[in-house]
Length: 201
Image (cartoon, rainbow, N blue to C red; front, side):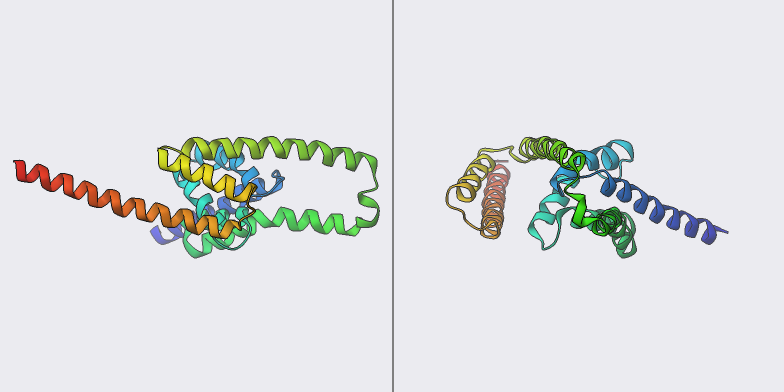
């Protein structure tokens, strides 16, 4: 009996994963960063599947790994909720709406973009996507830049990308290296302070 109940709850969890990420994929335009406000509402506020800090970590890891950000986030969070099968189910959920929409558009591709109301709709969607991306950037900035070092990395990364056109791969690895070095130095510093306190006692 308990096995039946646990198996039922497991499949229910997988179905819920698929349904949630299907809805997220169906209403999101503009890529992974534009999904952030929707994911926060669906995954953090409504279901408490994760918290905002963990969601930021998922996004940071997704930016640093190959592939589409939205798909990577879905895979990570699906794995977090349901293991390997959960990762596969969440990934399928988030890509299914895109596959359906692209297939439908492909059938009418020759005339699709010539329709005036389609052009107007896309213009409106582009403006909305720009607003969502701006909100996502501000959200990342507020939750990631907590110290002077973080602010310096932010400014340096922006200058390197915007003015010097440095590849983002080098910027990501450079920032990760700075973070590791800072962690090692701060850990050693804290250990010294702890030892000094112990010696004084």
